[in-house]
Length: 162
Image (cartoon, rainbow, N blue to C red; front, side):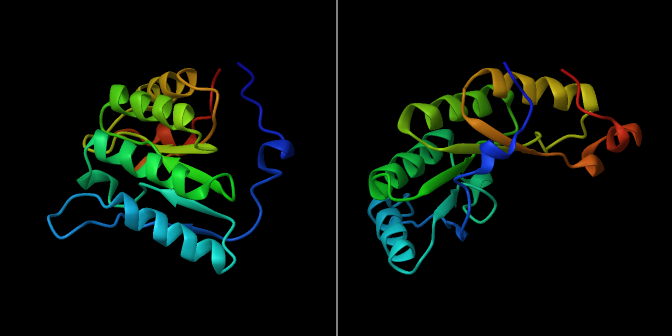
């Protein structure tokens, strides 16, 4: 797999994107209809895309199935009119892989991820996590490295390896 980033990776990513909050219904369930209404509103007002299930979308409060539901609702609402980025980061690599595969399956344009956050992790553990997630899908992904979650100062100065 070619891991080199080129300008073409970002060529269709221009414009304003909004981080979508996750709407709930009166019973506290994810509200897919409202996801669609929010996307329609954003598109009518000039947005070019949406970032789903990230911090603003309360990813840590959602089950894997709820995160998948948000992705599905967004793809249905977007109908190819905008770009969608899904945050697939999780505290379990297997969950992140499942979310990445689902994102590719339903038509999410890009994925993004953070390292598992519950415990401090080494650079090698973070590398394993990202390599495993990246190998699970052909979607372009962006990663966010949070060196403060590492045990060792060397994490911050390490460079990516392939």
